[in-house]
Length: 446
Image 1 (cartoon, rainbow, N blue to C red):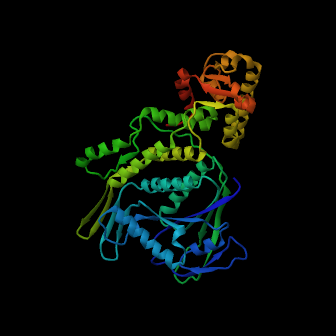
Image 2: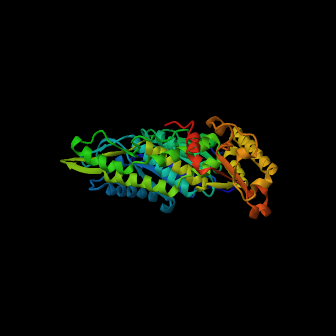
Image 3: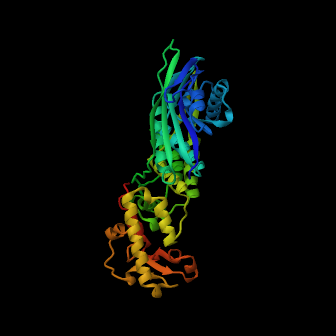
């Protein structure tokens, strides 16, 4: 792609007690210090290229007011941080405050106790959702991603780093991505200078974890263990609305398998509907939000999340991001040229898969040339073009999915003028697609 887009992510806790200090950019020789209550102005001045957008992750547990709904929680917290952004002299328009679900019990300045109950894993799952959504919106450029962990507390830096790294590895399937991580020295009262250090700088390598979805009771939400038994049945009905059907799960697992096993034709055959997956994710999020309860009990404010975003939600989210960034669509037929383009775009990042697919596509092309007359405008199984053998899943994987008993070929005469690779078309026999699906899933852990 060539041109990089720059994005900055950060984790923040409460800023009330942050003091004005001189932040010194030890990562950039010759740069002047910046005096502020946060390291953010220093980073915006020294990061190259300057970030187009800043995403600040904060926990909902920083709530400072008594509220009546979770929407009020989020709005109250966003405005609290945007006031600080104004104080720092940063343009609000480049900053997005992302409020993530935390847990714990805290005393407020007005004497009230605020209690947040729910699954701690929700923090990671929701942050991952927001990061994946952000990356999907910037899928047209190579990325330079910056992460500042200076102001994060407790579990926040660890979980944001994990969520960002995992999502970037998926996004790197389709483009070049660089990640740089910063952290300033810890502040203690009376200290006037803090150095901001470069912690990590690397080019992200693409990675697909071979983990798929389980068919049995595959819901995207779980019931939080703190929910009363009398409400459990009613809640269970709502959670069942997030259940995925068996056919969808099988095809999603085949899609994951096509990536890890190097199966370009299977990749197109089982390519998921990105919009459908996003709808399923958003439906689960809507139910999750609607099952949050705000209660007041004397001087105690309770925020209870009755549902939790489970591992199936996370898995589906990662599959959605992969399908989104690859920017392909489901097709049951592909030209040899298209299959080579998929190899170069995706599988060339892994030398072993690239070599294997190149070899198998050449073998298909050689067979087509040798049997040109019998396949012009006529579909023939590859086994009719030469040596065959019995079907086996092992042979399917060993030949990049172009197994001779399940794959058929033709040459479209109308396309020959564009070149033989465009004219040669491949697809799986319709009555063999279940075999192909099951073979493609091999190696995917559920």
